Length: 378
Image 1 (cartoon, rainbow, N blue to C red):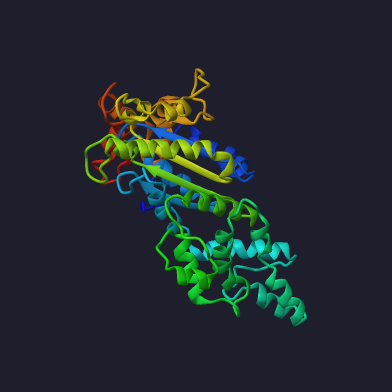
Image 2 (cartoon, rainbow, N blue to C red):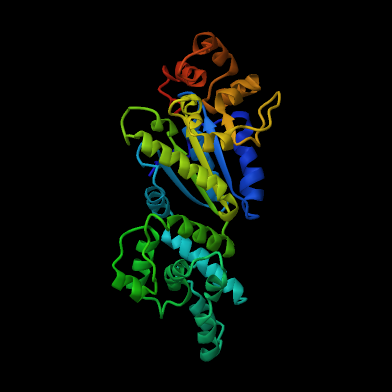
């Protein structure tokens, strides 16, 4: 799991990219059932990790489930490995409440899920609804999950078990709920335990994509916004540093997996995946994205303009910082509690025209080193 940056950490939105993604994707395109795969590239210290962290924070505030992984820590060449790091980051309590809200909406009942003891069953009791009618409604509360053809029946059964404590506590089985959650998270579950929980299918590496697709459909069907996934340190695919080692086969598996995710976008409602890495992984003809033609064709920016086009799938943070730099200088000065004049004083030595380290990082280090302030991260 990738640690979250503290809320007090200074942040400047390069080129207004985060605000653009919030308005056009988080608030519009994704809730309407769309999906997007985006890319961030930039030199060390250009703000990739900081921007991904802010995106997750904004997404969580807009009702999205969020997950983050690093290609240095997780072998992203195998979808089942990625899946097992994504789903455990989704709080079971949060997911259960989303599903309970979907069930209550279909029964025409307002369910106050902010109450610690809230459940659909308890709401019926407080309304004085006849026991027989209430039991009938509770039994069909999850029919909509099974009726949706885009949700695999085993996933519907697992989600029902996870939501039951918020819908019908008297019928919920703690063992079945734990089994369903373990199965959904990709853990190995004995066939006997699965049968007791009503889940007939074993979850293996060939089925995780269908399970993820089913989960996304269920989330949106219940009024949830979707899922935002960030994958950092993509340059690990071509480096020999610490962390996961990528052979040529593992690297090609990773590229093929991303290609499949892009092509499967229409069947992944509400999913936004953002991959970030240094420029080398985008430019390397031998081992980078360009070495895998099926993916390279899908990553090229089709529309080129005089200024950065924020709709493009690939965003260059170095380019975004250079655009409207005078305004960015003022924003950075405010964020780090200094003056624009102080920033200008160190620009000459902080902004060489070339190098592997972003001039933004050099600049921030130059004026924070003496005061002990934080340094802008990768």
